Image 1 (tube, helix red, strand yellow):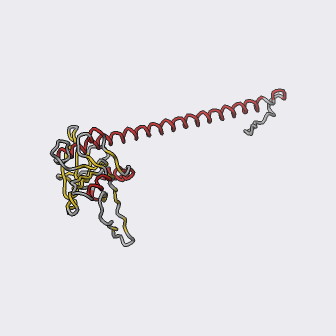
Image 2: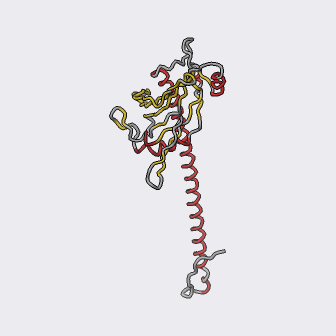
Image 3: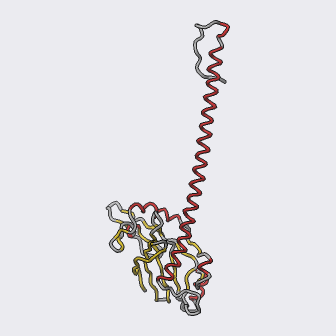
Amino acid sequence: KYSGPKLATSAKPQHVSGYFEKTEFETYIIRQLEMKKITFYVFISLVFLSCKNSNDKIEFETLRANETFNIVESIIIQDSLKVIKNGKDKSYLLENLTKLIIIIPEKEKSGIETIPLPFFNNVEIKNLIGKKINGKIFFTKKDSLNIINQNEYPENIKLDKRILNKINSISYEEAKAKYKRENLDLYEMSIPIFSSNNKKAYVQLNNHCGRLCGEGIEIFLEKLNGKWKIIYKRTAWVS
């Protein structure tokens, strides 16, 4: 039902009195159709952008997954982890990388920061952002949101076959069972934390060498000339 405006027709002959109403009705219908067309195009555009962003995210995460495995290989070689399948190395690397929890300290009403209890597989964001490595800031403030978003990563990522086929790997369940029977020299590596441009990464590596033997180190890597290099590492804990 047409509810649009009507024009006065007193100035026109009676036999064409409906002329203006019909023209406005047609105009009204055309406008409605144009609005629906615009809405349709907007909807299609949003769907396209949504799909594009989804594909970009998938490609982005795929890139990081590949870089993660490259980083693992680099650490094994450059840090001389004795986990290679060569008949000599007797250490093991857990087949799953563990997610690092990015901790954002909370402030109490007094303004004093609440310091979380220490535990494995976590890092405070303030210990990453602005930290200088070899005199240069490693992660900048521009990396902050990107690093926080990495809290959404899965709890663990299993190493791919190209690495597992080369090393002495073990599952958490198998390692737990072995510990009951013998001392086990075991390495546990975290999922890397990446910079926004995927050119820098931070990894935690824990070594469990007995019930009262162990060490944890922080490793900072940078991609130089297409290859990941350890540029700095430090001991985080020791037992």
